[in-house]
Image 1 (tube, helix red, strand yellow):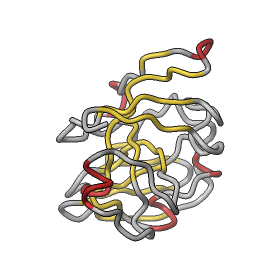
Image 2: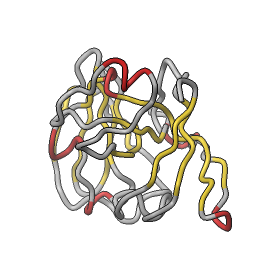
Image 3: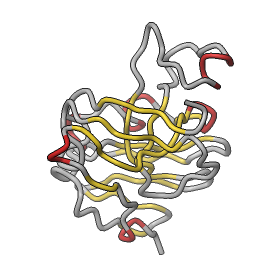
Length: 164
């Protein structure tokens, strides 16, 4: 559990990439996250777990972890206007989303934090609604869908995420 974790996708916020009740393997050894990574984390509105439980990769007794895609890194300026997500003024190509966002906003990602969004933009509790994610809350990067076995797939970070 110190090296990997397993997480169940609960809900529809990551459709079409991840489906409800799929299980993913999580690499807990990733030290730096990049735009496009799918991560598992404790949402910032929940109290911190004990350091021992966190180190051992033990699931929370009271709260469920979230799974979302990294969109903004520290120092990035994120805008959502007319259904287009832009980073530092460059629009993202996002072939993995369910549909363009119907909301608008602007966020400047502080140091030590990330901006995360679900692929099902309009049905996701994510940074656009509750704010930034402290990097220390990240449990790891999702690397593999392993259940159900018929959905088995390595999860790749899409190259289309690079903002120019």
